[in-house]
Image 1 (cartoon, rainbow, N blue to C red):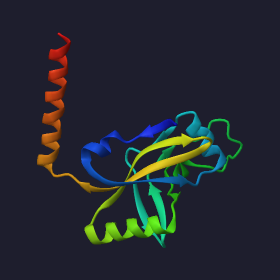
Image 2 (tube, helix red, strand yellow):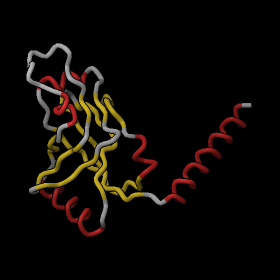
Image 3 (cartoon, one colour):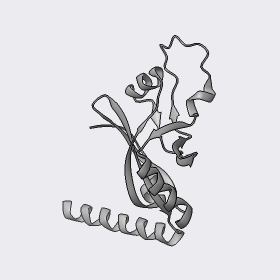
Image 4 (cartoon, rainbow, N blue to C red):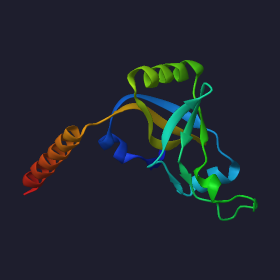
Length: 149
């Protein structure tokens, strides 16, 4: 499993509840660009429309050796369809609507030749939760430095 992109900020900003693995619909030039490492999921989020799951604001840099000259910058951040089972989509939709949660991608990786995106149903953290996480991280870092000495 080769990790292409990771949204490390999601673990800090959200409390991740349920995780799902989803395929993603891409064009040929996009997959070539992603294989070169030109992919970002830092500012994107998921949403459900017409019983289909999509990823919005994921960035794929335009492939340099592309023969398609009609492509423009708008397609680098287009909505990309996620491939999930119908039961999974219904479960996610129910949680999002009833509990007011959000859908956040956490990482993207290759399984064989297929690109998979791990998405999580998440609840936003409060400011005091974020401070607590920073405090815990600093204490762990200090303890590791003391142990090395």
